[in-house]
Image 1: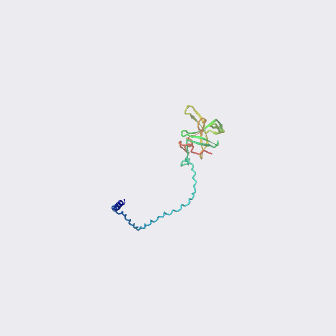
Image 2: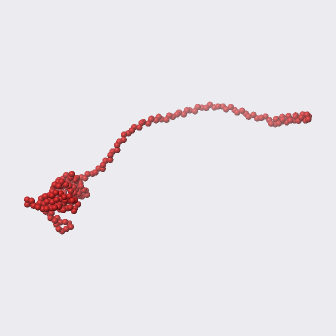
Image 3: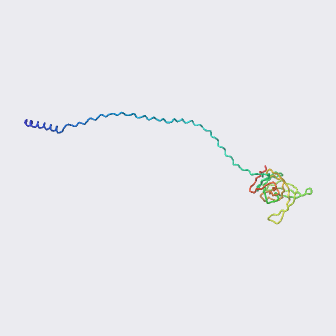
Length: 224
């Protein structure tokens, strides 16, 4: 037994040495080279740009509010009342004031009629101092004036367009006023209560003192 161990022991030792020899030395990793720190060049400082100074907002000043102008009323163009040589402008209709009655009446301006006419009722002819006179009342739209007595200037025969018969009518002279013009004119007396206008002004009145524009009405002011 001892002999056997003595034989095996040298063999085992020699095998171990062989194994160690075959294995070789353990490689040693080289040490890392020391890193050399390079100097860091200082970066140029970027100048900081200061934002422009902002003026503080001035305090708000309350502005006075101007009142809105009131709308102006429309300008109404006044009609021209007279010509350059002083004649009246008359429309197709005008207000006529009769001073003796202290009343205004609507009148039709008729360029086709020769003599003016006024609405008269209760006409009664009579004589005074050997001359013809007539008394009457002016009536229209159920309004009747007081009785008026005037001398007859002349008598005329008037024939209606729808009849062959003629009427004998008295012509009287009376004062009237249109606008600022006062003048006398001849009137035939006739019942005009069934007509629109109690007065009709013919050419014998306005031929020398007025110019008629039938496209207008009431150019002259109504007497107050």
